[in-house]
Image (cartoon, rainbow, N blue to C red; front, side):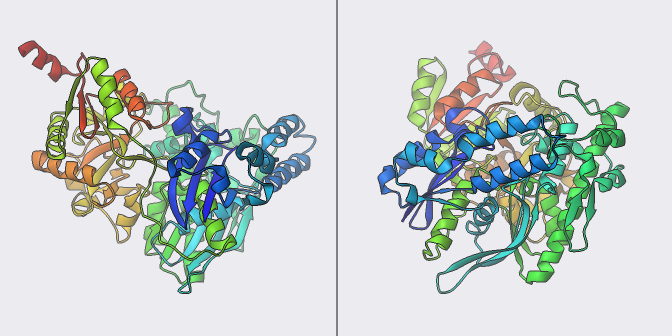
Length: 591
Ligand SMILES: [Fe+2]
């Protein structure tokens, strides 16, 4: 059975193809269109998935859209009318956005793909999140939590999943919390208040939080109160996202927390104002964590299960995930590599396969590499024509050459196989560097990633040595597989791992299983032989404002435009000629 899953129209649209119960491929539209968080109907991603599998639309048994667009339309209509006349300004906007293709999805899919309407199915938004988390995890029974900004009405669900011995699958969502009460919207409101862009800047709030103290927790708690049934409710007097398209926080919010930051105003942590924003970030982060810990603790008691599958955009908060692991009672937490809405394309397809069609249970390969593969010969051609130093090396020499470059403080662009599905680079489209000095962190922020200095970089290290450098609790290895947890760097290593140690002594470490990315694993070993420490700094291969590179040519173009010294797509190695690196200048002078 061939099932195509689609997510679109909010942000970061994607397509995924499941054949005979197993994913074949999945990709976000942004990786192909090169528009970050592209939310259009993902025709590029759909075409690539079909081409990759060598099939046409007629071969599909079903196309599944990741949410019920009519319900979403109803939510927008009702919440706009509820706040009428206050909301009258946002009404035409909301209607225009929803009345277009968002509502008439069935017709759009049918006409784009030329398939009969009866083949087009829908899951609910949180069923898709739940399936993306549970059906991709190597567990047979687990509690399920989903939390995001909003889907149709639901913003958070709890339930459980069961892959039964008879081959059947059930995903039961027991309870849901509804819009406008939303943990994702609470966090996004602070993201906007702190001057970052919503749906993208949430990472920045989490990074900034480490610089602050949670001095404003009592104020944040005025915005969110626990309800007797174990859920929470937001005090909507402080918010406007349910009634306005312009601003998500209200004047009362500003009275409580002070003037918001504008996006153009740099955050200077040496000033009282900069510290106020950091404290604000720390406070909302603390309240988010506390709320999730309470909910998951209750869910653990209710289900009695050792495993939790956690999906939805809120599951990208690695600091909160580590606290859930430490405090909820769950032994293992599975966060998929694409917990956000893009991942819903895969979740929707898997949900339809197992639940709608009752297809037999299958294990889903436990990795994120479902996108287009890099073609090394494209890199060879482009770099040769451009007059760069290009070599083709066998794997052993390539690994050794790259390790030596990293040890000499070179920055390496690393492309290997299929690109990752989800927002994080996990070893196939990565920028790598030595993790030892803050100078390297600052150089990467300044010359390569062009981003704020408070943003931390993450490390990658093999599973075998992770515990030596990081304080990994039981279950930490699993959270670290897809960089879903933030853990403490052991104090005795912080000085030698200064480029990846955040200001509060933590790091969002990727704990690498050799089977998942063998070439990167070999590189870490080789780097360990040079430096004595098999840890590398590891960040996504893109510059600020651009999607992660997908093809060899995009990697090459990025390499040419920023301070990366060496570019790899095995067996091809490109070494930059030019002024970006002091050492190569010296070498050229000697030659
Ligand atoms: Fe979502």
